[in-house]
Amino acid sequence: MSDAPFPHPAPNADVAPFWDWCRRGELRIQRCRDCGAYRHHPRPRCPDCTSASYEWAPVSGRGVVYSYTICHPPVLPAFADRVPYNAVVVQLDEGPFMVSNLVDCENDDVTVGMPVEVRLVAVDDDLTLPLFAPIR
Ligand code: ZN
Image (cartoon, rainbow, N blue to C red; front, side):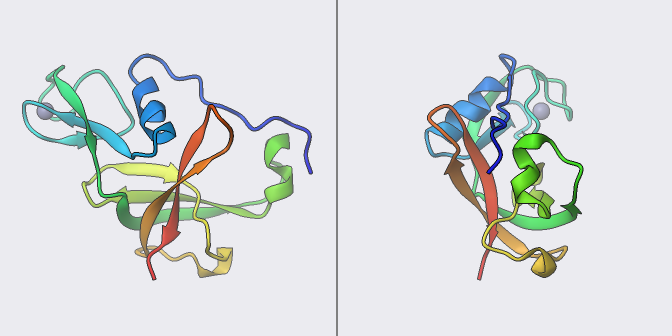
């Protein structure tokens, strides 16, 4: 097992609530209060209407694999024990994309268009990751 610490995000004020909600066991993303558009990665203004008014809206946690890759060495030391591992781009049912990993799925079984749902997995007391698993 690698001795390298698992990397933690260093979120700014726009992004910190996303990680706080994950740690509390809910997947929430920003939704514009003026036009209703969901967005992710978090940012201060709506890319559709430029409004600065938004809320942290709960989402279904469901989506599909939009794209993926299988990661091989070299990787960060903290991930050396995990190779080969997948990295996926999930398109949430609400529209936005999210980069994550697919769990409970062999790398050879990952396919574009695969329906998936979120699994909030605690790395430690400070970090909970929104991972995804196939819907079977
Ligand atoms: Zn908007």
